[in-house]
Length: 340
Image (cartoon, rainbow, N blue to C red):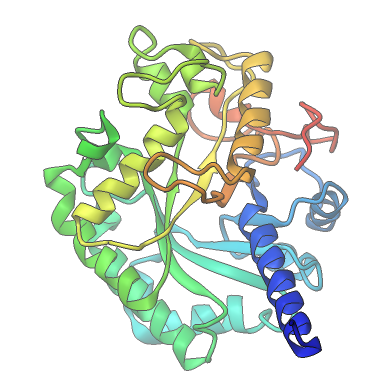
């Protein structure tokens, strides 16, 4: 016979479990600011709240944005821009950065992760110059977070691109490239020691764009009906599992992967680029990552994922498609009528 206390304990466990599932299933959207026609930071935060978007990635610590986020209960990834990494190899500079951008707001802004650098790799021509600074910057920011007693609230990590991997098909064969392994292994060890996830930017669009003759469009858009020979029914899961396998082979057992960016352009020309394809991708991505189906390698696991991006960014550097990843127009209207 179940006692009243047992009922309360079970009820409490059930409530806690439900809260954990809701948190795990939440969708985030990246707030890029490379536009000259975007709403104010306060209007952006209000737009997130009005659309039940519970997580945000912010690429630089702008006081206007952090102030607008106060009391919003929106979970935040805050980036340390690549250009700041060399300065943060000085422990005092890292402490000052954390004090100014995290500690000053931590009582009423919900920081989840600090992404120290974005897509840094020795093999990335544009970003290789930052590679020597990443690990010491991570260590110094972590030390500052610990000094301020925020280590249980905020996890220090970095964000990688899938271009660091090789032998990615089938995903179980995936490893880090030879030119990246000595760079990434100490970072993976750092994440293990601090029980932090690894952030990964995962774009089936770019995989499809690079190999449209070999990768079917439905496979990239989650609409393929049958699995491929390796058992995968969509490219997103295959790419995510490839990261998991490579991280594990580099010593990162039990490190969680958070998908810190994923999106599809609606305009700008090129293979696979259209409003219809972008709408299909975002709708199916949201549905997929909020389910508990997980991936072949990580079954039954919801996938914390951040859509890229909140707005089209009309001054974004790069090809024309780079300006058309928004799920909202700058006038705050939705492109695709998504339910977050």
